[in-house]
Image (cartoon, rainbow, N blue to C red; front, side):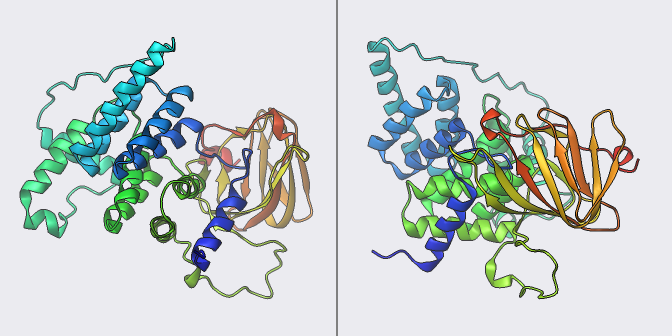
Length: 375
């Protein structure tokens, strides 16, 4: 069956963004990818393949208790039958591995949740934290229509489940959007949880890679649907793209808006070169709107910046802030902590070249304060 034009476009985008090596920004790690696969296959009831993915997850370093917690979390979105069947398969797998002499790590168990006031209020607080909602926001219509659902959501889903430890909020949201993508026809909920993913620290690159992981498991239609919702959340729907300004001095495309906790302000990225086994470099066109900048960070293999437009600021730890302008070239040595971004009154575009990528990926650190930026 021929793939639709939309799917071909999505696949090309994903394969452009995600080669076999770490790119300019964070990607999902092997354990996160395993969590996604386990959750999707649990929701689909594919017990043969979920057993394979459970086995891969253990080999990737997921603890027994972390996997158990993932499977418990799935029940809130795809029901007890699917969750319990995967738990039973997991028990069988652990016995098989034990008989082969494999000693799997059980890891940390979930801590008891003490009675700390109203469960409803605890759940509401967690939900507000995840959604970054302002206090006093009106309830959704379906919660007003059926108040008991509001109680169950706050007291059980967000107090009983999301309040548990072992899994981080990022891991719980990966499980959630995986199950929602697998069961389908729940676009409003998927849209909301993609927004929560961004709130808890996942970025647009990681979420696009999430869809790439789905592509190996779900049908073309299911993957298209999830990718469309993600595009809507990220605000990158191509039908809303403005025509190119012929007077724009930028040589390379501006790319997509970066949604990441590693930046202050609005930043855009177009990946240009991907590291491979022959050329251990990556390169991307990065555009900062006025006042936008990176967090402090370092590159184990070093970095080169070629300023192509506007003016900005660059600083290495322990040195003064310097102004950079179109035509400037910055060479940052390996493992030197630094930041860079646009001036307050100008955009900044530069080609960021990550050299010697075989030495490791970028290491992100704390944000640049307004005081540091204003020096």
